[in-house]
Image 1 (cartoon, rainbow, N blue to C red):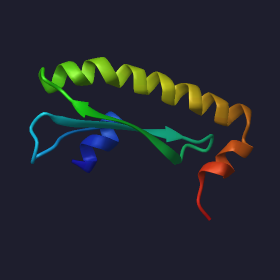
Image 2: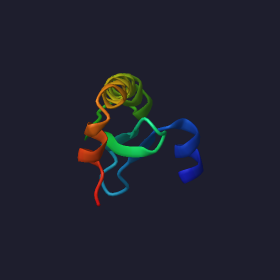
Image 3: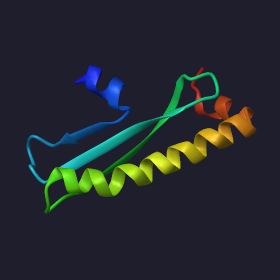
Image 4: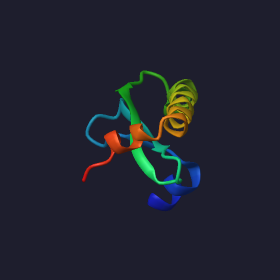
Length: 84
C-alpha cells in the first residue's frame, strides 16, 4: 500500500469496519521537496469509492498546490509546520 501511495501521491482508504466510511489524504510538500503536512478528507459515501475519489481528490490537490506555493513565497511558514 505504501508503494502505491508514494506512486500516486495520495492515500484512499475504505474503513473495514464501516464499508461506507472513506478517507482520502494527500501530502503537502515544502520548498525542499519534503513532506511538511497532509490534507485529509473523510466522510460517508453512499455511492462507490471511485465517485468519492473523483469528487474530492481534485479539491485536495488544488488546496495542496496553493499551500505549497505559499510555502515557497513565505519560507518561514515551513518552520511553523515542522516539529522540533
